[in-house]
Each structure stands twice: as C-alpha cells, then as structure tokens.
Length: 193
Image (tube, rainbow, N blue to C red; front, side, top):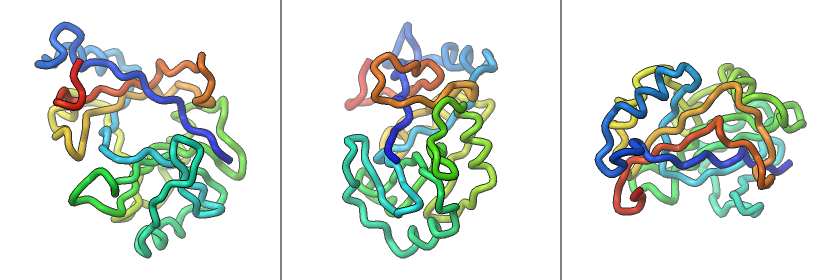
C-alpha cells in the first residue's frame, strides 16, 4: 500500500513581517481552537510498511535508509498490519541518527484510512509504543508561539498545525484539500518569505 498524506500548506509565521515575526498571528491560530501543534523536524518524510518492513520516500521509491538493529527491534513492537507516516531523522541531521518520529497511521488492519480524519489516525497512535529510536510525535494544544520560538532551524524547522477534523486523502490529487495542515517554518537562509 502506498500513499502519502497531503503535503501541508507552507505559511509565513507572520504575514505582515515574515522575516521578523511577532507572536500575534500564531497566537490567533492557537486561540481559534481548531488546531493542535507538532514540531516540524528536519528529516525525510517516509512511509513505513510494517507488514514488509519497507521504507518508502515521496517519489514512490524505496528509501535508501537501512534501519539499525535498534530501530528494527523497536518497530517489531508495533502492529504488523499498519502503514506509518513518519519523519526519519538520519540523513539531514549531523548528531541525530536512527530516530523515527511517527506523525500518523496511513493504513490500519491492511486498509488505507482514506476518508478518516487525522484525529482518527492520531487516536490509534495513542496506544502505540514509544522508544528511544521510534516514537510518536508529541502534540501540543497550547503554547504554539513558544514551540515555534524553540525551533533552531537545523534540527527543528518550525511547527505544523493540524486540524484533527481534517480528512486523509491521496496526496497525488491536484485538488486535495490540505487546509487542515499548515507548516510554519522559522525564517532562515534556506526559507525566506
């Protein structure tokens, strides 16, 4: 089974002054009560098919990453009938290797969760094991601005806001509704607005 979640909308942290953001815009998104926040890690977005142990990239190809024995051991504790969407912290980070941060489950009991909500997927994740090498991403219901400020740009690039009511769809659909998921990156040389 291969399908990625739709890619989040990239928005500036402050539409008025994007390179020197003030907290007002991010605080307004938090106060709307529609979103939860996760840290945006600087890794490779991957799908992990637990029935086969295969890692896939966004280009429908096998990812070149070869899991360490520690990663394989922790993945063996997860249900075999799931497809995970995760951030692989290995290639882009100098001091963090063999760490997988799971965002959501894209397939469960052998079927894609198409039409289900991100919140449904997250609910399944709450009972999954978290270890040193494979862990479920933390979600935050408040403190979005502080979470954004804690991003260093190298390991943590910013935050992703997600509306738990957002529907999971095929990402290859050109008209896919991605409004439920917004990526807010810290301005830096690589990402200027």
